[in-house]
Structures are given as structure tokens and as C-alpha cells.
Length: 478
Ligand code: GLN
Image (cartoon, rainbow, N blue to C red; front, side, top):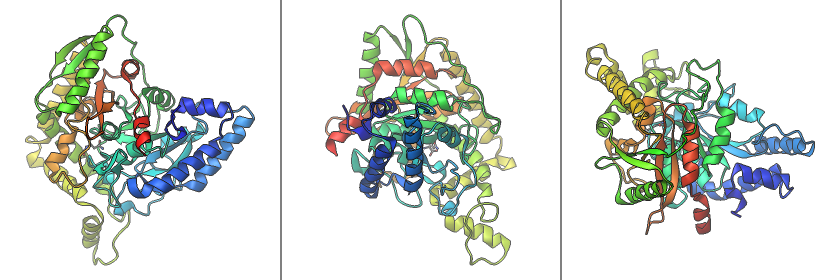
């Protein structure tokens, strides 16, 4: 049996049922682990030890009476710091929100509270979820538990690292262009981005509302399935929220589209993909090549749309309506510009400026309109492909985790999203699975599966054929 801090939800429930340990014991163990490791890994921005212990004791009391609220009752988890948590600081890893304490819980946080799950704290991220490495956190970067000289990925880097390093049983993240799947890939954990709208975004601080999705980071696809069954609920407080209507699991031979194209994966990631392909073929799947129209154009379209929406969503953080403000400005205009200029990071400012530029009336046809049309083409193309395939198999990320400080230009950084943005542009569910480690570096390799809208069940069933949980491998190296 794996060390207890690396166990799945089901394993913890079985152990607690057998009175091996209580939720309080488990919560204390996670808190100790956080205390030991956070200095090095930088996964947490805020730890709520008192709140967590109080929730754990309440869960133990319910267990003693046989009144458990759900399969998550007593399970310690953590949330990316862009989910509103009542009474707990929510910073989006930005100086501008450094002291913001929300007066309400995001719907997902509320559902987990009602289910008895134990919130340990809030996790580091790229500022306002813009980035692929957590290096744009205003506080400190998150480091990769497999090799602390490497990044954990981003923007949900804290979420991936916390699960990978045994600092939480599972974590919530957000995925607008790959921010759950890419760090999951770098840290050797499972990352799910569900169909757009099936998990409520109410209380998730928006980046690009038409693509943002609440995502899940876990040790296994089974844990994702369990969490999704609880969290996928229509929510009246989110106008884009829809009910999940699960697609049937394909009968007969599985039809797999293998994404092909130049420069999509390093030799090591390609080798993982080959192994996955062979495993599926050996199980009787038909694997056929699948190509997408211009991945680089998709990345550009994503960049235009995401920055446009972000510039408008972030306009409220001006030091007057929301956020801290600098205290040395004279006049309202200076107050705005000084606050935003001094308290927002470089990448955030870059995207706000780019977004504002492309949204100007005279540029509309050149940028926003073209990106929107291309997005529709991608969506049509992907949806049509699901007549032919049950799932698409692809790399999650072109490479394994890169070194802290290695990537110097924004465009190089955007390249990390090459294989993930499709799912967001088209609103599709996609999952990243750990798939062995790279020879020599020992860094996690991964693969990604993408399905038609509402095809999470298909993803989970294919994942169960492929899965090789990995955090245990790292545990040996602790
Ligand atoms: N890495 C991507 C970006 O920087 C994805 C962000 C996200 O999914 N939140 O835009």
C-alpha cells in the first residue's frame, strides 16, 4: 500500500471505515507535510489549519454516528487561489488582491463543504491564471516535486504540485487553455478539464469566461469521476451552467484518433504516446491518424480571444471597485494607472494591453473576428471528428517540465498550450494522465485524451485501461 499521503479518496475512505485513522489524523498529517515541504515547493499561499481541523473533527463525529454526508466526507483537499472562499484570503496570486477576503463561497467550495470535505488551504498559481509555469505568481513560484529546479507548470501549478507531493488528497484548479492539464502533466498527476459549463463557475474569478472551466487534479481518473459526479450540477447562479448528460460508453471496438503533426511533442513525450497507442491497440482499439488545422493558428486565436475577455474581466480590479490601491496618487486617473501599473505583474499587464488593443473598433476585423471564425472552424472540425472517433489521443504538453527561469519570451511560454487549447476553444472534456517517466531525468511523461461534449464517462473508461498512477514513484524519492 502506498504511503497514506498519496492514497486515493477510495483508499482513505476504506482506511477510515476500518478505523485505521480518523479524518483528524489525516488532516494533521497533511498539515505536517505542508509545514515540512511548502518552503521548498511553494504550493500553498494560505493554509487554514484551524478551519481544516475543525472540519475534520466534525466529520469524525458524523462518522461515529454513521451519518457521513458523502464519499468525500473527511477527505482533505485544497483549492487554487482563484476560487472565492468565505473568510479565507483569495489572492489570485496577485498583489492587487493580496488582502481580499471574500464574503461568500464559490459554488464548488460550497458543494464540497456540504459534502464534508476538509479544505486545507489555497494554492499558488500564475497571477490571475495567466501562465504556464507559476513563475508569474506575485509571491513565489511553485516548484516541481519531482525536481525542484523545474517548474510545476501553470497556471494551476500549486494544485498539481500539492497533489503530487502528498500535500492534499485532491485539488481544484481552473483551465482556460490548459491550466489544469499542463501542470498535471508536469507533476505526474491526473488533470481533468470537463465539458464547458458542467461545473459551475460561480465564485471562480474569471479569466476568459467563454473558455474557463473548473478542473480537478487527483491521483487517479477514478477520483476525478467521483468528484465530477458530485460537482457537475446545474447552478442558477452561473448562466453558462448546464447539466451533464453523459454519453454512453462505446460498445465494441474503441475508435481512437491519434493526433499527428510536426513539433507537437519531444521524443520522450512521443514515446509515451506510442506506448499508449500500442496498449490501446493491443486491447482491440482501432487507432487512426487525426490531424488538426494549424495548431499554431489555434494558439494565436486562443491568445486573441483569451486576452480580449481577460482585459474586460479584469477591468474591475482597479483599486476602487475591487482590490488594494496605492496611496500616493493624486487624482482619480493617476489612482487607476498607479494601482494597476504597480500592483499587477508584467504578464497580466501585457495581456490587458493586448486585449484592449484587439478590441478597439478599428482592429475588430483583423483580430477578434478572425479568431472567432477560426474558433468556430475548430469546433465544427472537432465535433465532426467524433463521428469517426470515440476519443482523441494526443500529447498533453510538447515537453516535460522545464527549468525555473528557462523560458524567457512570452511566445515560447504560450507554446506549452499547443495541444491543450483545442479543448477550451471547442468546449470539450479532456484529461491528462501520467504515463511513465523520462529516462535519465525521471520527470513525468503524460498523454491526453479528448472526447465529445459530455464524454467524460468515455474518458474515464479509456483512462482506466491506460492508467499508471505515479505519485508513488515520486514518494520513493522523497
Ligand atoms: N497557459 C495558458 C495561458 O497562459 C492557460 C491559462 C489557463 O488555462 N488559465 O493562457
